[in-house]
Length: 291
Image (cartoon, rainbow, N blue to C red; front, side, top):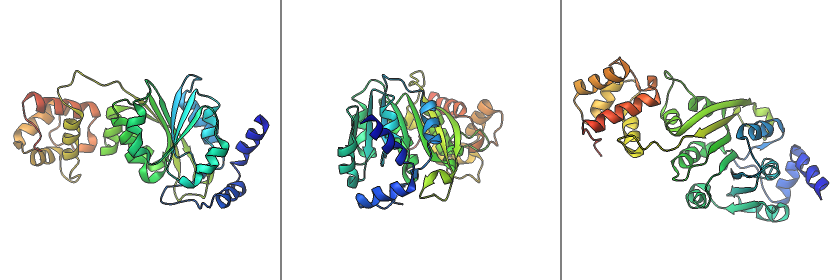
C-alpha cells in the first residue's frame, strides 16, 4: 500500500497522468479557480521547509487539487484540513484519503472563520489560486484565531508587492505587514506548472504577530486611515488625509513632520510602524475618522 502511494505521488508530477485524472473525473484545469498543477517537487520541498512543520502540527491547505502538496503534508503533520471547492473531486478524495486528512467542501472564504475556532494553533500551507490570493490572505490575517504562520505559493508579482519596502509600499503590503512578518522564500518559474500559467510564482512565508493591545486604535480605524492615505497615489499624503479624514491640512502636516520628518511624504514611502504612529496620534487628539 505504501509503495502504491509513493508511486501515485510521483505520477502526480507527470502532465500525462494529470491529463488522465482530469479525463477520469471530468475536469479541465479551470481558469475560474486558478487550477495550475505543479509538475516538479522542488517547490513542494521549499514550502515544507519554510513552514517548519512538526509531527504535532495541524495544517490548513486551500485548493488541494489532486494532492501533490496534500500527500506530502499528511506524511509530516498530525492533521491536514484541506478546503476544496471543486465538487468533481469528491470521489477522488474518497478513494485517496487518509486518517489524518479531512477535506472540507466549499468556499474557504465562507468556512475558515468557523473552522479556525476549533484549534488552539495551526499553520496554513497552500498553493493559492491567483484569483483569490489577496482575499485569502486578508481573511486569514483578520481571523480572531489567526494561523501561526502562512506558507503559500502566489503570483511572483503579488509576493514582491507584499514584501515591499518603503518607497514601493501598497495597501496590500501594509495590510500583510501589519499582521505579520513576510519573506519571499523562492521564485518558482511558470515551467513548474501544468498548464503553464502566463506568469511566474513565488513561495511566500508569513509569520503572524500576536495582537498588540497597547494601541489606542482598532484594526478597523487603522485601515481606514491607510485606505484614505492611499486613495490618490498622485497626491502627497497630507492632502489625501486632510480631504479623506476632514482634518485641517496644517494639522496633518504637523503630524507627518512629527512622525516622518517630511510633510510632503507619499503613502508608499511609509513604514507600517509610521502608519501606526499616525493613527495613534489622530486618536489621542480625538480626531476620529469620518465614517
